[in-house]
Length: 296
Image (tube, rainbow, N blue to C red; front, side):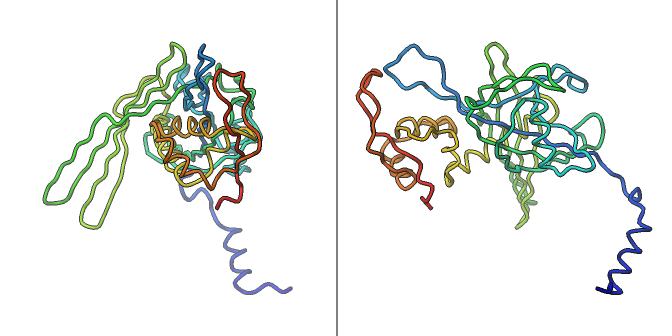
């Protein structure tokens, strides 16, 4: 097939195009790997409490040497963002074969002390018991950290030009005696019909780069998504009790749920089986359910 004049002109343009005409920032990926992990308990009569936990690596090299960070790294020139995310996750944590969802792209001018580096974040909710996590090429340790996020301050400034709202969130990440903290300020500026949002890390203790901001946003996205999707079922075995399912929802949302309201909410998402739990686990048998993949 003969080429059109437009195709010929396009090829000629590309042959003479100088890619160095514009600055080329580096690009990285960062990955939030989240899971629900049981608290240790000696009370066999009671279902264990569950915590939302996040996988972090301890950095091997500068910058932020020996600080804790999300797994991730630089995109190679021949790679897609997603390919890089899976490669870096495998190299740094030994994790593979999971689904990653693109979260957000971060381009603050000062987010990385090495220079102009833009990062795209990915997120996944996984069953940690199915993973064999270990440190890799750029890390000296990998650990699961319990996640706590609390709204600690709200302010509002009203003027003739508009409204500015401030919300400060405290992020606390805990693994045994390791405690990482950060305070992230979320700012919303309303001027007429125009709304602008921004963020600022006010305090940061041993969390590398702007990863505290990424974590806070990722948790907010997860909590919103669990309200309308079946993502929580990624953490459930093939059969489960409704009480076990409720514990998972409560860990993600960080709040207690009313039993009747919760069961009404998930009624279309589950299918009752003919099986029940045994009677030798300290409490009476409970009905077992499976996930209804056709619930929508």
